[in-house]
Structures are given as C-alpha cells and as structure tokens.
Image 1 (tube, rainbow, N blue to C red):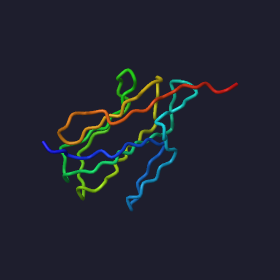
Image 2: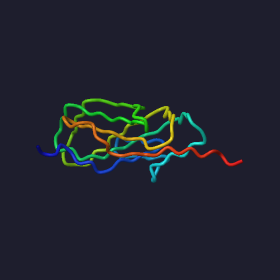
Image 3: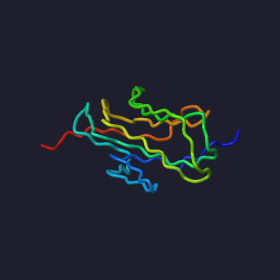
Image 4: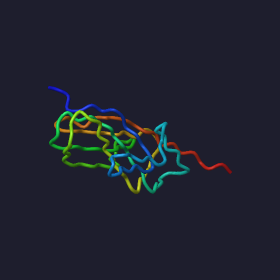
Length: 134
C-alpha cells in the first residue's frame, strides 16, 4: 500500500490562525511542548495545534485528530472529511481548542488519522504544575 501523506511537523500554540493568503499566524508558540500551570485543574482560554502534511490524493474517507491525557481520557476529538485542492504540496491543518481544560500533570498524546489508516500518535506535550513563587 502506498503512503497516503507525509507528516512534516506538529506545532502547539495558544492561538493559530490561517489567513486567506494561506499564511499562518502563531501566537504563544510552545517550542518545548511543555505547558506550565500554577494549579490543576485549569482552564486555559485557548490552545491550537497545527499539523503540516503533504497529501498524495485530493480526497480521503475522513480524518480524526484527538488529544488524550496521561490516563487515556480523551480531552478533544475533531473529525471530518477533508478535500485538498492540490496534492504533493504542504497543507497546514489547524485544530483550535477553547477552552483547553487540563486535569492532570504528565504527557498528553496527540493522535491523528487520515483516510483508511488507524489512529496513531503523532506527537505529545507535557503539562507541568509549578506553584507560583511566594
């Protein structure tokens, strides 16, 4: 079976927006994939993920993007049926989450599926509780 797409990278930021010109704006980028919070649980106003892929076909049977906490609880799930104007060119997929609720510390998994493949881990980020200094 040939590959349906290439995954180039996954980015996490407080907010990610895509303009009509296809330019992507990142606000509050997390280069270390680590979210530091003063306490748990916490409601962050927003969080977004950008997945850059290179599709090898215009239509797919569907996609799923999900986030799971360290205990396997699903925190977010987005599904749809994508259609791409061009193939073999990078395409940013943006998934906003608002509010972003975190209940526990530890590694959170980012899962993705495109077409007929199974949901697979494409990244992770850590939530760390650091109480404010007194």
